[in-house]
Image (cartoon, rainbow, N blue to C red; front, side, top):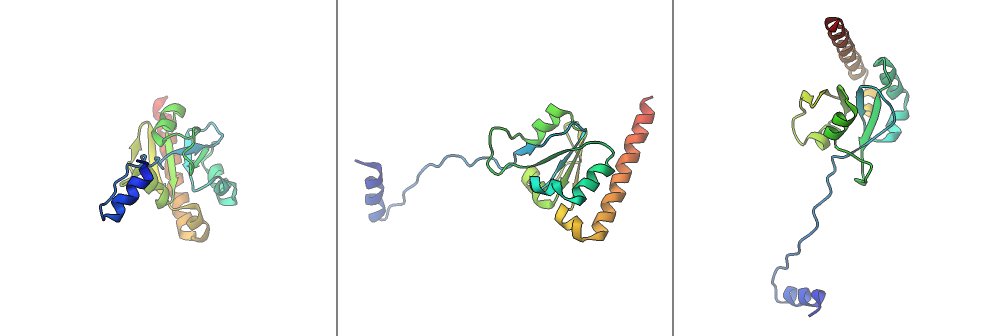
Length: 156
């Protein structure tokens, strides 16, 4: 009997029909942009990296950071955050927005993942309209810079 016809008969008799579905694709994969810095910045989309605020943040870090964003199609060129940290030796990951944090970590954001310190900060859209959020981010970035400098001095 043809499968669709069999299902129709079962449904007509009031019998629930269970079908196995392929497993949903993981949505925690990232597309990694160009760059070679030790800091990975994760935002909502590639368009978000082109704004003035994104440029200012990248400049304030004092290096050429690498931007990344969620891969909506989960294509072959995407990778997990863990893979990106291991492959590209990132030492700091800055995740913009709670939505991205939830997507990547499915719960509590770890302080360290692999070799990278992880920081969850407000989304770029929120930072663009909230002066207090922007100010808090600049203070936080300054502390990261001071920590990196003191670590570098200790290594000498």
